[in-house]
Structures are given as C-alpha cells and as structure tokens.
Image (cartoon, rainbow, N blue to C red):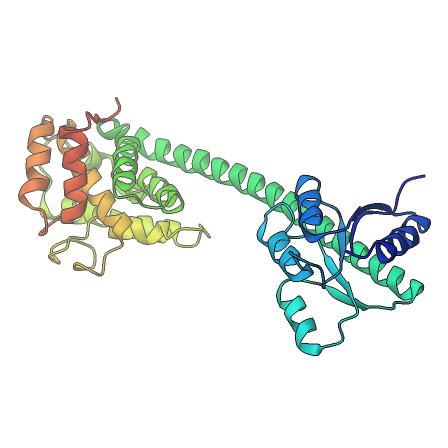
Length: 341
C-alpha cells in the first residue's frame, strides 16, 4: 500500500513516542522516530521528511532549537513543523510560530484532531509545492517564448536595415558594424544585458529614417549643399516617427531620435545637452562616428581608424560622453578590438 506521507516524530519520552508513531502508522503514514533533538536533526538533514511532529521540552537540544536549525538549512527549511507539547503558555507558542512552526497540538491530544492537523498541513504543503512547480514551468515557457520573440524581432529589424542599406551601397554594413561596436562599448560600461539588447536593436536600425531620403542624395559623390544636408539631418526624426508606434520593451525610437545629439547642445534634431540624452544614444553616437570615419563615402575616402579615434578623443566631454570615449579607446588600443568586415 502506498503510504500517505513521510513523517518524523520526535519525543524524548519513549511511551509518548510509541503512541504517536503507532497512531500515524495505523493511519497509513511512513514514520521515523527520534528520541532526542540531536537524533531528530541528524535524521531530518540526511533524509528530509514531509512533516515533523516535534516535542518541545527535551534535554540538551529542545524542540525550539531543532526547529530553528531545520529552518536555517536550505534542505529542510520548507518542511512543516507541528509542535506536540503539553505547553499551554501563549508566549511559548508565539515563540514556536516565530521560529517557523506551522501548528501546535497540545498534550494530551485527541487522535482525530492530531490526524486532521497532520493531513491538513501535508495537503497544504503539497499544494504549495505543486503551485511552485507550475509557476516555474510557466515561467520557463514564458522565458522561452520571449527569447524566440526577441530573436524574431532582431531578425525582422535586421531585414529592415538591409532594405535601407540596399539603397545606399556606400554604407552597406554600416548599421551592423555600428551595432557591433556599440554593444562592445556597452559591455565595457557593464550595462545590464537587458539594456544592451535594446541598444543593439536600436543600433541596427538607427538610420532607418534614411528610407525617405532620395537615393540620389544618399549616393551623391560630391559634397552636399545646405538643403540636401538638411534633408539628411531629418533622418533621426523620420526614424523616430517610423518606430515610435512599435511597442518595443526598450526606448528604441528615442535612442534613434537622439543619436545625433551632443553633450554641448550642438547636435540635432532638438539640441539636447548633457543629462538630457539617453546613455544608449550617447554610446550609439560614438560608435556611429568611429565607423563612419573609417569607412569610404561617395564624397571622400575613408579617413582611417587613427583619425576616428583622434576625433572622439579631442572632443570628449564636448561632443561625446567622456566615459564612453574612454571605453571605446581602450577597446581599440588595449583590447585588440576591430570592426567586423
């Protein structure tokens, strides 16, 4: 016959311990007996029971101390403890509850009352454990679903970025390389992975607003006139308008909007200053400038990495966040970082 539960019965009086054990066994429970607090503790720690029936008044190690040590051990801290004692004092009962006991059965006890309390606490504990298992299972499934959703989101955003870059062969791969460098800088700043994920996505689409700029301007071999440059500058706001209605778990649209803002207020489109710009946008700004200067453009050859690093170094604290510049310089000069092909 399958037993109803695994119980540890503890009492320093042999006759009381035998009576308690016999009642529980007759009801179908599997029972282990311990005649002292020390023996009870050793037994419970080696093989945790589902429930402990614990006498209080015992020599050397009383029931309160046994309960305290059971609750302090991660393997037995969730095992329900019912005190079985002749103690009637309210303060003592309060102490028992404070130590983690779930119930008191007063000696001499009624057989039926004892069994009802044992059954109730065993069932309650099993339901709690089952609920915890269900929560863990559901949480695991939700996390997996969220992981797949975010992976799909990245694929979708990357596809959009590729569509934009297809209109401008001179900047093909720009957004991907910027995202790579921005992510490396963010890790150097020890940003949480959650924020880094959002920054990566924003970096991949930071030039999405260029989709509304005529291709002949994007690919113009000579320098842009003022009107053409004003159209180029609108890409940050256009990108924001495209992205703002999408319910990302990160401020993607705001990062895109702010990636040309500068700490001294000379950036665009809103002339934000230090303290008003998102950190992710400041990281993206540095990565964007470094990648752009090292790459070829229709109107000039690539200026090279040294020139790009000199630019951010000379303008740290003015055009670029000083902490971000410091990390970026270390990546290239001390950690052998290189932009992907």
